[in-house]
Length: 187
Image (cartoon, rainbow, N blue to C red):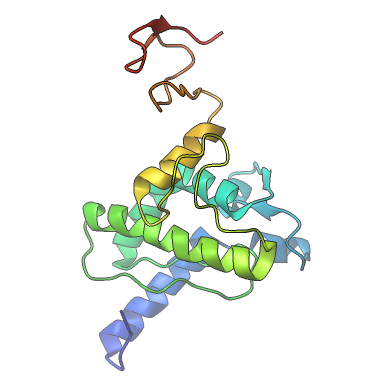
């Protein structure tokens, strides 16, 4: 979607850009770093906690799992969605503003994460495209929610991966594996 000279479009762009910069603020710029040695989640920094990520996929799957509701809420409030590069280089994803429903922004979020991931990989980390999961070799489609959730679930310490049924049960629950029919418990 291209922004025209329409004053309403310009106002939406300003609101969405402001929300994007607030959402994915340049965490590294505040630390004076230029090279992409580690990526940090700007949401977590604002909350007073931070973990370093060495991959765009690690960072953005974390953002998807932990901050999806906040991203969608802010996008609905701004009536548009954009994400900015956490490296502080000025990159902002293309704006989505066709609708303002939760459902619309839920579908748009993985597309923005994919755009931002491509940018971070190409301009900051130099890592290759992850076409399949590094943990279980499942093919991925980063324009879809399930792909980011799949990557996030591998990193979620509350879950474990069952390779028989390609599922992520919680460690503290009984798991009846559809692949084997056996009841299993995490040990």
